Image 1 (cartoon, helix red, strand yellow):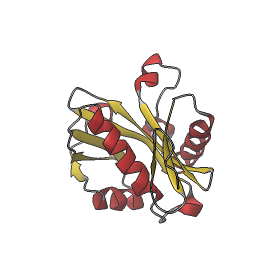
Image 2 (image 1 turned 90 degrees about the vertical axis):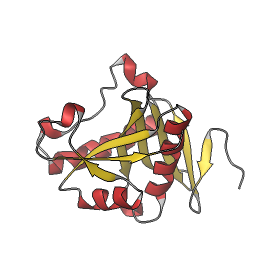
Image 3 (image 1 turned 90 degrees about the horizontal axis):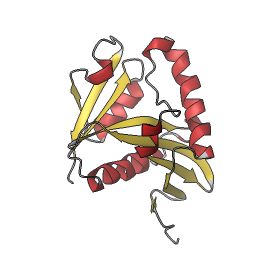
Image 4 (image 1 turned 45 degrees about the horizontal axis):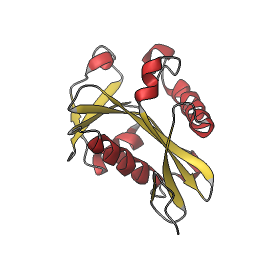
Length: 164
């Protein structure tokens, strides 16, 4: 398989590509993520990304394709020179447990390191026990709530040291 420019080949048939914030496949996946989160949390406990904010264009986003179909996504935003935050991480339910999430996570970790970050943080929630288990397997460990999540009781925050 030829590796597309700006992409990383993961598990069989999966290609993870860097995409801009206005990518249509990314938007569709995030729409499905938001619908999923709306079933789990009250609206004020969902911490999305404001795509109308010009700063969002500075985020690094990726979409995973399985045999050409967009099936997963994620992004990173810089919090400071050393720290990036993993945001809008999602894999379609029908292809979960196929290694796609790991491919996206590794792609974004590599991108964060390329940007000079040595720490990657994230926020998820107690109802998302499968996410917590996945992130733990990826080397993330629990931390105190940070930033906009400090006062949100349902937030569960984690971080991982990465090599720049």
